[in-house]
Image 1: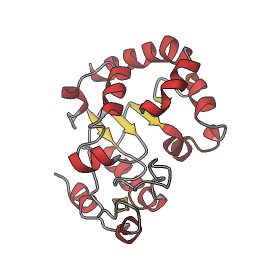
Image 2 (image 1 turned 120 degrees about the horizontal axis):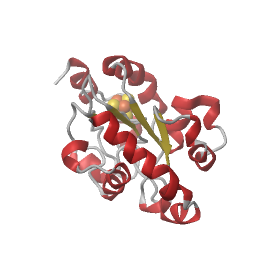
Image 3 (image 1 turned 90 degrees about the horizontal axis):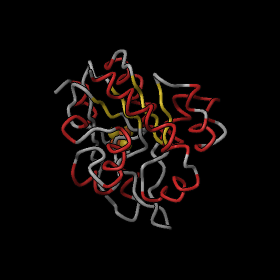
Length: 196
Ligand code: SF4
């Protein structure tokens, strides 16, 4: 385990903020990366199941993401091949409607550049959801997730913007059949290529 992973795992910067949420939970950062990874998955923040498991995408969203990528848990959880860098390393809590709160921006401001420098060049980056897309693509992601993902050819093959693989986006997937028909085959081919 690197010093940086240990440092992030010990981070408690958001303790007061999380204590004020309905779940009143303590920070539990879930850092998951190592230099030399071939794929970087930039997501939003852990949900409650990941918070409890201490393992990223250890939930149905992760199952769907692995299906999109055409890989199983054995490759996904091999840190020499795949790194996960969310916009926040901790579960942020729920809002009044029961949805996850936004990732605290402080987390990316504190850790992102250091993790990216630690990783070095990664040949394939997946940007999952609006927060990661706006952070990494800037103005190119201002139109929203649908517009950004629809413009995936502007960023591939180094970067693929994706919607969040949550069940909440099942209707989005039905409304946008080009995602499964056109984007996913190219994504799976690229994943295979960078892992070869
Ligand atoms: S979300 Fe990030 S900044 Fe906040 S406590 Fe967790 S690791 Fe630290």
